[in-house]
Length: 310
Image (cartoon, rainbow, N blue to C red; front, side, top):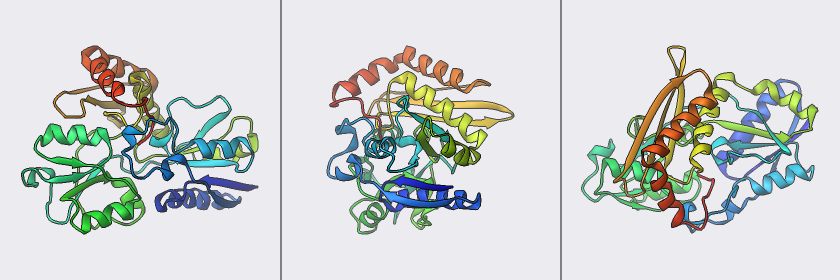
């Protein structure tokens, strides 16, 4: 079968699309990749938390799906809004990479070793909030651009450290400046971080049959739990919410965080269960009851809208 994959044009997005293309070719399919430029790729001078555009990394790709220009889309799962339009299906979540965040620096080996008032680069409110909870003195400055751009800015001395997902760094073989993989207990990752998502038109049964073989049960269960929590909290990856689910001793364990952007209020909760969606919704409700509502209301109130992107 001939399949056309839609992908963003960044180096990491193309790695992801090529990885899926290679997997599909192993199953006898003919695959080509079409690059699609999204709104999020065009806005590079504003922190994503201030843009407020829902689906800003997926809208144009989904339009290409609807129009039949492509047969499937490969996304970073954390880019994908928790509520998909009825015309699309999340048909496969392949094997997941490490979901944790990485502390990258030329000079310093860990967060606690940063000098007073160090300059740290990230445009993620989730990372900023948890970092400030650990180190209230650090100065957090926006950091946009692809992985190469961010690492180049670090190497040139613009920042004392930057924080990136270890998954992307490993996929691109750019781990030279990784000094610390931050424990989930200190910096809870974004829901779906490290996972890929393959989206198709809901009624495209040929594509569904071709791609379904790439679905990984454990990755699907973990991310379903994380995204249920995210949906309960009404947020996306660009609000200070973290969620990480993993199987421990045969049970699904979920850790989650909601934090104020200044790091002064950090709510953490965790739990175990067998039903991933029920567990995510339950922990989400507990966080809301404990003060998460007021934290998130203040975050949404200062933004244009509640954005859904990393």
